[in-house]
Image 1 (spheres, rainbow, N blue to C red):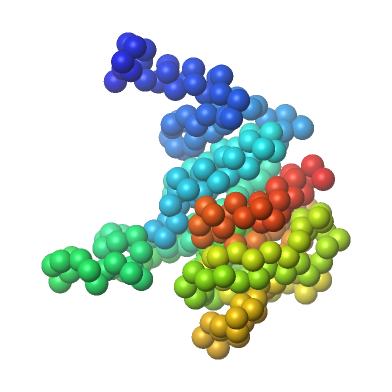
Image 2: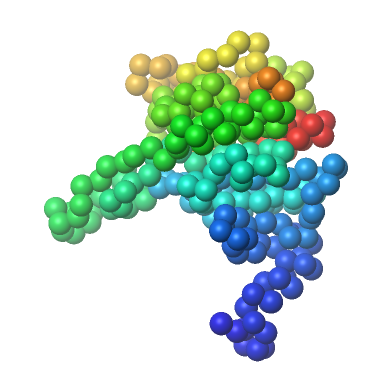
Length: 289
């Protein structure tokens, strides 16, 4: 397909990618279906990150927009994919950081609506749709590839609902450091900094965010905990109270791991203190600070 100027679409995209200071997104790169910031090339000062985005409840384009801005502001190259099936040791080989913002679920028969909490009951002819059921996408080999990637000296940034992957992958949980429990509906809560001395939280103030307050099990030493969430209105989640661990960072063998729980919406990802926190996390994980 050509543009109105007669320029082939692929050439137009490549031209845009080459000149855009903001790092234009190209389409597929080979069979890995990775989009990337074409204007920035990896180097020792600009190590490359791969992000895995997108699931039923988290729009991949919103995540792409959020992190494309963040990596542009950091002047760092950034690739992303929605193709979880291709994630492997080979795919990770040329990267220094894997960033994950997606859960561990796929829906082989499809689903009625992206948000089944609100809309499914409004659909007509619901009885004619296939019954929804989920499967876990991550394989044993993929979990071990991520674990070995970090153990070899690379890094993992696990964001928001990616803690759900740990529920079905012991290897991912081992390196990520915890596992998803659940969350209440979107509502305001406080994120409190528990350790101001770590590079992730240095200069970060406590902040209020309207988001899903994710509750997680934490497996590692308490000294690595950096953040805590609390619903200061006294609202609880099931039998888990009002507070939960909301972020940590630690060394895993030769590599580094960070987890931050905020991130259901673009607005939450870009909350000013949280945005600075994510920038700090990327710098620390890439050993730039």
